[in-house]
Image (tube, rainbow, N blue to C red):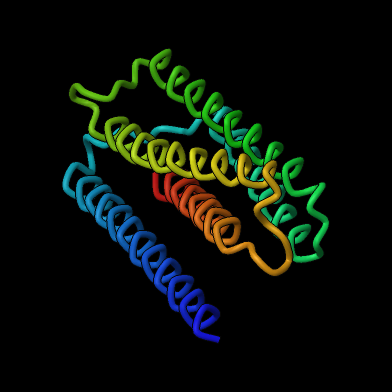
Length: 190
């Protein structure tokens, strides 16, 4: 009984820490997108409207597919289908890495259009800052997926014990939601 209560307290603490971290990320992107809107209003006639390349659209689909496979891993765990957990996580990681590739190709397309991170084009600078900031958060998410993937290979998760898996996938879904927000923001507001 004491061990069970202790585990529940630890699990709640981990969940609360993840929520605080996610709230911090939300506030970061809220600040950056607010600054984007203010800058666009202040530079109205000098603002360069930039259309996102198809590479960013493809990367959006890839992170959604990755999130789907991550969800499938958790669903398999809850069903105690431990053989499918690593497979689903591996696919989530692969699609997450493909997201990286297409983000880089998206930046390349901006460079080919003479839209750089620094210089006198504030609009393109914001696109780089927003997408690079998300990129580094996703890097952390992929690292979390790799760790839970390795733990799943060691059969550390089952329907009775899957806290690490649940939190890692929750963070991955959160990063997917943040990207969807940024993608819609950049396609609609820009």
